Length: 293
Image (cartoon, rainbow, N blue to C red):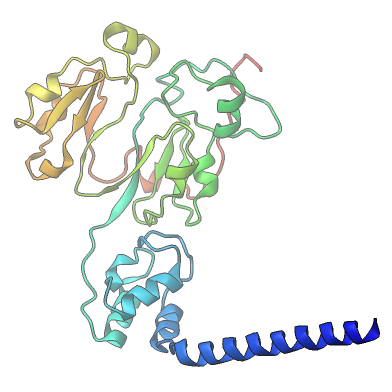
């Protein structure tokens, strides 16, 4: 009996030693030394791991930079000086990447859309009110105004204005996409600043029915299509859809005859300006409604 136990221990120990030796040899044969420049480049990056560059984090982005699979300018968080430092270190061109920012596809604030209820739960968030009631406004497609996007923004680039709409600071915004992910109504879109023609409505209604619910809703009149170069805008599900691959042909004229201003030519801030809003302002007070849930 004891002999059997000793034999089993010896066999298991031998197998363990054998496998350990195989692993050690494999590690030695297959090991690839990491380029030391990766760590040095990572130290030059902001370390926010926001993903705005298209990579899951700064480490992964540094690896792509070292093998010339990306350009330093793809990091929208780094300062111009930091980008140039990385480019100089790697001996590459910094590259030019057009500034991208988060845009809100809705302009229906408190003044434009009737607030049906004021959710007074422990967590007053857009996601929570969506789960509980489907929304706190008469328009089921529009911004709920509870500031989830402002809360989640790592760079303090979003603040709620007095009308209950999120204002994106285009100077601070890094196009990380956190606001896109947090919005339960999917109203944020990351867009280049050169795309100035924007439809600020997601309602699928038309005519007076749409305008009765929201004064800045698209009523599907189609004037923007008529006033635009052929193929730039087309109507789908009662909403104008802009073909941004033809953005070079976009002009302010497309928005001039819109009766509700649902489509606008935006050069800079969407709602107000940086001088009129304190960043970060945080969550907006939604307790003004007389109705309680």
